[in-house]
Image (cartoon, rainbow, N blue to C red):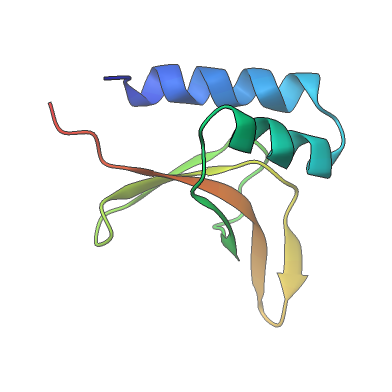
Length: 84
């Protein structure tokens, strides 16, 4: 089972090799990351990791954020909490 640091490293490598967002999302899906959502973020940048305590997931931002209404949203990969 992979740790969050290993997952973040794999995702960061994909982010660095694919400049176009569509190519990046396709590469993430091909690597097995199917939990890609277009959701809110807390003022982070590409590669930023958020931990959502209530949902027990890690959310890794893979696209630039844009403002919708009052809140920024971006494409993120959601990874469930890995139990040790």
